[in-house]
Amino acid sequence: MNTTVNVEGMTCQHCVASVTEELREIPAVTDVSVHLNSGGTSPVTITHTGDLDAQAVEAAVSEAGYRVVEHR
Image (cartoon, rainbow, N blue to C red; front, side):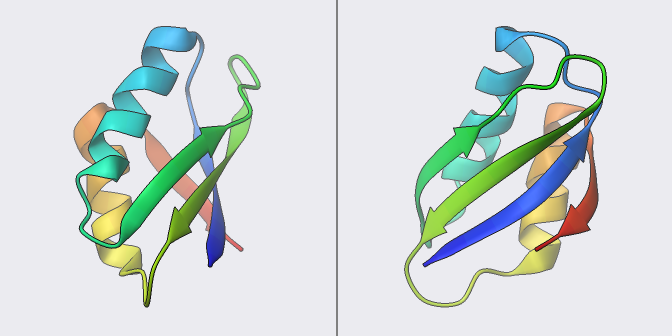
C-alpha cells in the first residue's frame, strides 16, 4: 500500500535523506520516495505493508527536523 504525506521545509538532498532514513525505521515501511520541492511542500510517498500509524509518520518526520502538513 502507498500513503502520501506532504512535508514542509526540505531544501536539499540531505533533507530528503534524513526524512527517508527516519521513515524507514517505522516497522511497516518498505520504501520511501520523495519529490523534492525545495523550500516548499514536498510530497513523500511511503510504501508499506499493513496499516501505517499516522502519528509514527509525523514523529519520524519531526525527528528529521521537518513537519507533515497533509496526509493523503
